[in-house]
Length: 345
Image (cartoon, rainbow, N blue to C red; front, top):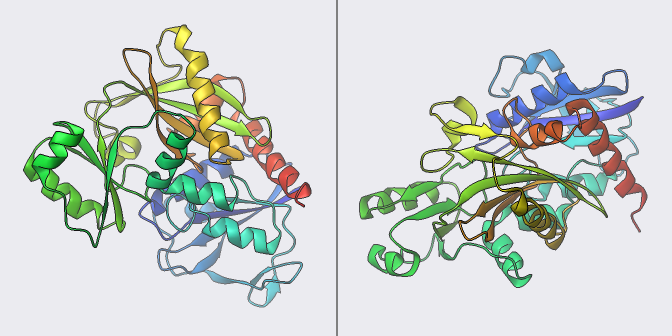
């Protein structure tokens, strides 16, 4: 049996989504193949040892529970009440957003020499920052929406000037955030004022991005040296797929798998997804979000290095549609993590 460390919670606005993702992973994995240690990270940064059932009905890791400490340099690095939690064959950081998906936790596991699921430090970092992502993808010849970068210390752009540059409808996005947290669709000056104030609560860098007229499609990519792409799914929503729509079913937003598109576009979408994945140096897994225009043009929107694993999340559902069960997907992700660690120079 493999010993697997699962981390959830974390210090980001996506804390509760991480818990829901971890809950589904724990339910789906083959317990005859793994011994699982669950550690929850509170929003204040406390690490707690948890029994899997303790996250059944919660949305937040509180300060209760036995504290976990880390002792770098030791063969067994995680301790609770002075007792080692043992050796881990791999770690699955089910952490979305800052301090979990941005290279920080990945750097910790690199220092501890513990194989971990998902892209490595650099790929995680550049994929988390939407501004850096877009610059790298554009350099590699891929299409991305035009954007204006606003920093907290900058003088805010004038609304009328943004309209001239980006059009009458645009999006405001924190550069380092996921799950549509802090994202706003803007079609008026009042909406602009509200959107930029709110987005700057989540990050010191904000993208003001041109709206792309097209279908919002998502593709799951899996693998290290020779990644493979799933089919594509589609989010059918009114304006944009908000945080509430993604996780709380507050609207008529619908996930369609497989997307009902002309099959002639599928190879281009899959090729673009893998091209973006490799351009950013991703390994293990990522979900690539794209737009398909009426002219057949493919624009890369975002690359999510630790996509959601909730019961309604696109990544595992896309692989289920492709014939890879949730349990088998977890097995492959763990094997990819261990395989990468074994090949490090």
